[in-house]
Image (cartoon, rainbow, N blue to C red; front, side, top):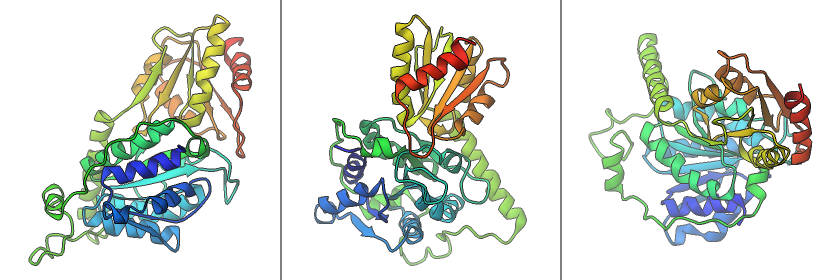
Length: 355
């Protein structure tokens, strides 16, 4: 099935309480699949097409405030409209899942694949000092798996989690092993697991107030200090990266999502020609695997960062390798163009291997 379809069905099987979204290419199959599956008749899950992306993210805020497992999905321009709501979720310490199947920009751009929302996803996007946990799938299987992982991490740390996919992964079809159906949590289970949640019980009105506004600057600073402590804990415990033949490589490719798939073939072409090339695929774009990439940079002769953008993740790779003298170059295509492996390999030889 398509990546978007696998994600939608995985959400049902997780025991999702509600989806609130709005159609936009190339992620519309998420909403369409949920509508076709009609989970409100089987699990009781709410599926609602909101009137806009702004309405969607605020409905997610309301559901998350009640301790529910809720999510939304959109594509790049739609995510731009959701940024204020995501910032509110972070400030109120609410767990929620947000899916971005990226398309080219800026503006309305193109409906074709891109990875140009990296900054928006990993640097906060909205206002204030906050982060989302950002997972980058590179297969249909991971589109399904990361739904469960994203919600588990969101509830563990009481923070929004984002699946940052792109039009290639969302639209392509692969075999996928779907998880078994898990029952939705009962109201009593939600009360036990989320004692902070709004639940309508008398006597708890004063204790359970979900908000992001604090007029006392000293208290607001304490809130921010608590947020930062949570982010440091996430950075210490939740970094994920796939490293392929990086222990003794001479050259390193760094790529995520669909470009990582392209670079797998690039690595094969280079190996066939006798070059020792490794591949690092960050799975968590935040927290970013600085330590793992930095360790490889200490012994390799050059790094190429391959992205479908003008150069965004390369900034984090440079930070990872800042204590080394390893040269780092960027290869990227924009406007919805996905390069073939031969094109990337020629750039790797010209910019790194034969330098």
